[in-house]
Image (cartoon, rainbow, N blue to C red; front, side, top):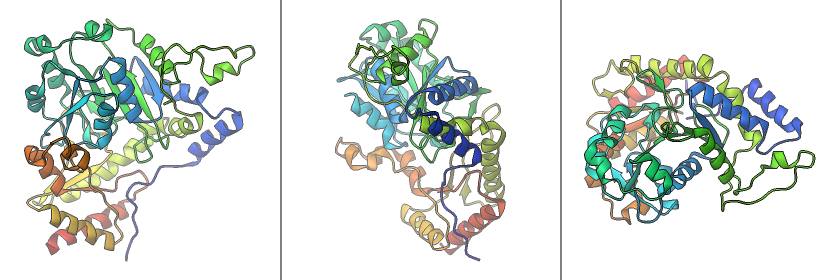
Length: 404
């Protein structure tokens, strides 16, 4: 019997509906108490020093890099295997993205980072692909090596105070993942989560900046600064201005307009309250189902999942099929579509996109990124997916591979 299985529908239940309705009925729908509550939930969940809600992860990365004083003439190292937002955040503040290859787990190669560091390098943005954390101990060790620190040429107060390259984790996929028994959100100087519609926790559109800079910095004071910058540099947010006698404000910085609304935050607020007890558990169930089935086949290369003291957030299930071409992969996807299974590919490597080809990047210089891409199929993985549907998906993939 033909099933129709979507790739990634949002998780909307009665609790989400009640939380959103509560926001609507409160008379306050833009940045206000729901946003503040979501920020606090993330701080508690991740054990972060502070967390600022913004309208997207892209905006969050831009704001973090801008705070560190990164601008024209500076370089930021990023992986070839990521969504374009990672690179655009760098480009939009005027800096140059330095793209490096990845490893077999899809994540950035620490060796390639080392080779790419120059006196212009001001930040590195590792990406936790599919929800699997990068090798943060190795990255943090690298940036503190004497020869690397000696290359760092600080500009401005924040760069001088840090005295080394800034690490901003693009954790768009990885809320709830752990690395050596620590949750993402506290593994680097700054972490940025995405709450886009397809993410594990969603606000439809949105993101969160988690601050964990070293003790030389006051993370709560930085939160206050970034919050002000995210609201046009205005000394009072709209909620404060509506209070009796609170109309007067000033603009003390040429800021941005990248705040999150209470309506959007309400969706995420309902979801994060049941994230560990339900949503993450159910994603793991689907992930484990696929793993238990596909490990029977020698053509299946399974995503990383089984390392002591580390775990995925199970955001994607990136199945790779050994020894196939990009064209054969595309044929498999077409067969799955005919049989009602919607899948995806994550991601087209940056050097294959026109913007970066025009910047003289060539995919031939990123062999692992291309191999991962050419053989990868992202399978549906979300709490609403039943084991019966998972079994159907596995069967259709096995049949499609067999036809090759």
